[in-house]
Image (cartoon, rainbow over all chains, first blue to last red; front, top):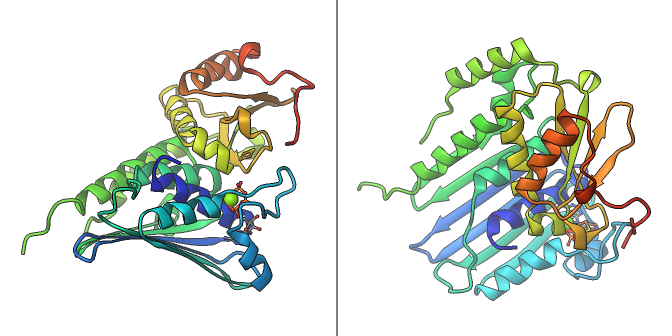
Length: 185
Length: 127
Ligand SMILES: Nc1ncnc2c1ncn2[C@@H]1O[C@H](COP(=O)(O)OP(=O)(O)OP(=O)(O)O)[C@@H](O)[C@H]1O
Ligand code: FES
Ligand SMILES: [Mg+2]
C-alpha cells in the first residue's frame, strides 16, 4: 500500500465483512507531539481472545477464498516501521477498535494520501447499509463528516449516486484543506 | 470548522430525484469493483473513482456501481464484474482507468464484451 488512506479503506472493508453498521474513523495529525494516529472503531461482530491474537498474523484469515489475510498485518508493519505502535481491541458482539500510531516526522512514515477518495470509495460500495463518521484533527483544528447527516438531507435518494459521491468528495477535500492551513493565534 | 453545504446537497437531491431510476429493480447493468486487500493495493480505489466520474459525466441513470470483497485472484487485481440484466456476468482483470472507460462504453453501453480484458472462461482459480 502506497499511503495510509489505502490502509484505512482496507481496514474499514474488514469492518463491513464483520457485519458492522457503524464505523468511526479518526485521524490525529499532531506535529507538535510528533504523533500521527489512525483509529478505526466498528460495531461488527468482534473477535474473541484467540481470534484477536491470530488476527495480525498474516497467515490467519477467516476468509475461504484465499489462505492468507494481509490487511491488518500490513498496517501493523507500516506503524512499526515508522517508530509507532499497532493495537487491536475487540470483544465478541461488541465490535473492534484498531489503533495505529506513527512518529509524525519518521522518514518511513507513509503519507496520509487522499482521504476523500477513501471515504467516497467506501460510501459508493457500502453507504446504504453502513454509517460512517470521519473525524480529522490537525493541530488545534478539526473536521467532521457524517454520512447520517448526508442521508437525512437526501431523503429517499441513495447516498451511492454518482452525483452525491462527487459532492461528498468535494466536501471532504475542502474540509481537509480547511484544517491544513496554520491556525492564527 | 467547515460546515456541510446543505443547500447544495438539497439541490443535488432534487436534480437526482427527477432523473433517478437508479434502484436495484430498474437497473439495466451492475458493475462490481472488487475491494479486497490486493485489489486496493493494486489500484481498485482509482478504478472505482474513475468509473463513477465517467457514469456521472455520461449521465447514465440505469447503471449501478457497487463493491465486493476479495475475489480470490490476487495476481489479476484490480478486477471488476459486469452484469447486464439477462446476460451471464463477465469478469474483467488487470484493470486500469482507461480499460474501465472502454468497458463502460463498449460493454455496458453498447453491449459488446471487451474480450481482450475479460478473464478467459475456465481460467478462473480460487487461490
Ligand atoms: N473489524 C473486524 N471485526 C472482526 N474481525 C476482524 C476485523 N478485522 C479483521 N478481522 C478478522 O481478522 C482476520 C484477518 O484480517 P486481515 O484484514 O488481516 O485479513 P483478511 O481480511 O482475512 O484478508 P485480506 O485483508 O488480506 O483480504 C479476518 O479474516 C477476520 O477474521
Ligand atoms: S484481495 Fe487478493 S485476491 Fe482478493
Ligand atoms: Mg482484510
